[in-house]
Image 1 (cartoon, helix red, strand yellow):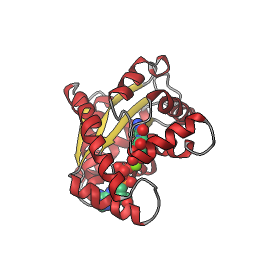
Image 2 (tube, protein in one colour):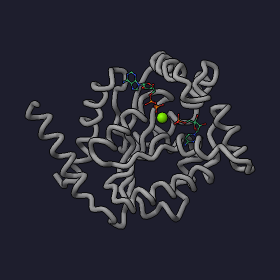
Image 3 (cartoon, protein in one colour):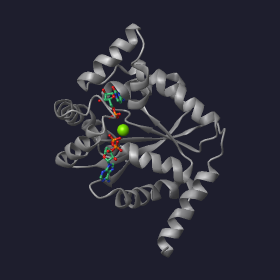
Length: 223
Ligand code: ADP
Ligand code: C5P
Ligand code: MG
C-alpha cells in the first residue's frame, strides 16, 4: 500500500473514531447522484470499511410501500412514476433511521438519495428534529446519462427493482436533471459539495470517494 493511501486511510479512520458515539450533534453526510450513479454501492463501502451508517431514502420508501394505508399508496404511486414522495413522509422514515443509527453509535450517518428536490431541502431545514444534526456536506457522484442507463439496465436484469425498466429509468433521469441538479448546484454554492467522477469501475470510484472525503476529514481533525 502506498504511503499517501495509508495516510489517507489512517486519517479517515482516526476521524471516524474521533466522532464520539452518542455525541449530541449526530454527523450527517448527504449523498446524491443520478439514478444508477453508484450511490448505494459506495455507501455500502463506507459502511463496511469505516463503520459509517448507510441510510437510503429510496430503500426506506420501497420498504414502506407495502401495506394498505393511504400513505403507502402515495409512496407506491410516486415510486412507480419515478416521482419524488412528499417530504413529510420521507423525513419521518429518515428521522427514525438516523436516530437508530446514532443510538447504535455510528460516527457518521450517510443519507443516500436525499435531499432530492427543493421540497426535500425545505422540509429538512424547517424540521425542528433535524436541528441537532450536523450536515457535513454532500457527497456527489457525477456520471453521464449513457452510463446511468447502462448500469440501470444491468441492475434491471437482476429483477431487483420495479423501477429499473427503460421507460421509468429515463423518467427518473429527467426528474434528476430538473429537480435534483439544482440542489446539487445549491450545495456547490454553499461550498458543501464533495464531487466524485463516478464513471470508472467500482474500485476506481472508491479511490476517488476517499480522496473527495479527505477535506472533510481534515476539517474534522482540525488540520
Ligand atoms: P444508485 O444507488 O446510485 O442508484 P447503485 O449503487 O445501486 O446506484 O448502482 C447501480 C448499478 O450499477 C448496480 O447494479 C451496481 O452494481 C452497478 N455499479 C455501481 N457502481 C458501479 C461502477 N463504478 N461501475 C460499474 N457498475 C457499477
Ligand atoms: O435513490 P433511489 O434510486 O433508491 O430512489 C428510488 C425512488 O425513491 C425515486 O425514484 C423516488 O421515487 C423515491 N425517492 C423519493 N425521495 C427521495 C429519495 C427517493 O421520492 N428523497
Ligand atoms: Mg440506490
